[in-house]
Length: 152
Image (cartoon, rainbow, N blue to C red; front, top):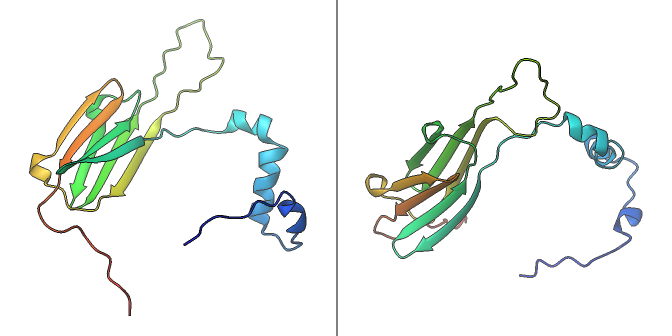
């Protein structure tokens, strides 16, 4: 299967559609014309970035969750579905007589779920959190991995 798309430098010109969806038109407008001013109003949500690797009979997950206390991170395992949620709390540390000029640190609740090829042994799973990185060691259950059924 070939998933390559041929590069066409004139694709935006040749693809003119007078009945373009208004959402797409608005998105293009905000990306080009309003972007410098719009960025000031934008709220940034915390994100969980992950690396998932397989080592022998276990999965190793390393998730970056900076600025979160260990007690505010929750991991749940349901068969082969792993969910990580975290809450970054907003700290108001402006002292009297001072004012906040710019605040770029994000806060809020974030969640990330992913599916693995095989079920995980929940009783033997391990989690460590240090220096903003959550490391999960998820041992695989013995047996064949899940397979997708063919539709007839």
